[in-house]
Length: 469
Image (tube, rainbow, N blue to C red; front, side, top):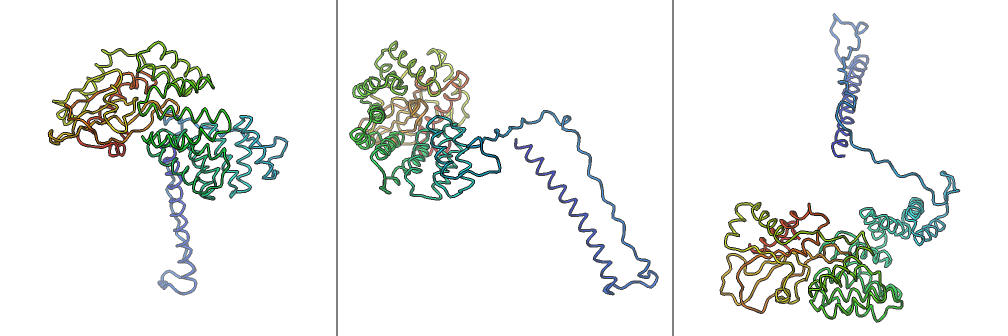
């Protein structure tokens, strides 16, 4: 697509230059003739004015472009979607009333007709460019269609027009926390939108509960599970329907899981699944707990139930035995630059199925049970006589909102003695973070680079800025 756009713009530029050059010469010649007629230019006696003539301009013809077929395969052209009117009986040149368009958009969203709702919202936005409702409906329809970038722009326009619109703020928070790719930055943006909505203070009880759930989700994604329990507990107590109560209870279970309170989290997920047997996330997290407890068959049953309930978010874990996985890790180490391999000369790189509880709880707050890797020990160059232990983890968690990777938990001071330096890679967590076997090598290499960064003294923020979150 890029080269097509470049060639098109260059052709337009070249044609414009040629046209302007020809035009300039003609104008200049015509101007000289007019100056001669007015006596502003001296004429030599042997060339009387009557015999003067406009010189002939020779214009080089542009080279003939070869036919498209000789330039090799062309890029496919994406055809625009067919025209759809909000009200099919309305002619293209006729306009429907904006309130009617917005009502129709809302009803089509409720009927799960996102294409129709988008057509109505777009018509309304064209007629009323400053309508917050029109841009909000556009954002909602685009989100349903998984056109996330377009949805993000639509809600940004709504908030640019009205920064204190609670409906738009809540939608934006949900978009950044639950739908855009998981990252600390997206979670932070979503959390700020929620807090701005709370500051506005004009919202009903249902909206308040929804905002409390979003606040809890954002805090969990930022590694602040303890703080997340406060708004989530408020949401459970204030929820006026079972769906909202289940949503808040599930998030409490996630927070407890992240804090390594596995017994409490298991009770919470069991309650969620009792109320909603098709809760995919509940099945998935319950499977994680059972897996840690060694109940492999029960865990696999929960993972399969999660896939059956939501195949778009959950997928089978890539199968790879311990020996094959260890060989992949050795290959990743051998691919590192020689300077990094030298740093690892005396540092063992080991593989385990899952992180040990002792390693997770050595920090306060605990590390996420879904970490892909961990660096244990002080950074190179630090004295080994320091009285604290430095444990660093790979900055991605495989649990997340919908089974995808979440964000990191900031490291905290430890309470124990300095351990021997080592890097651990966790097989089951890492295999669960990818969809296909072809992605395994890349995931191992990224995890290894992250942990080597900690070995060299970088924190999670520095690694995130370098693209190694």
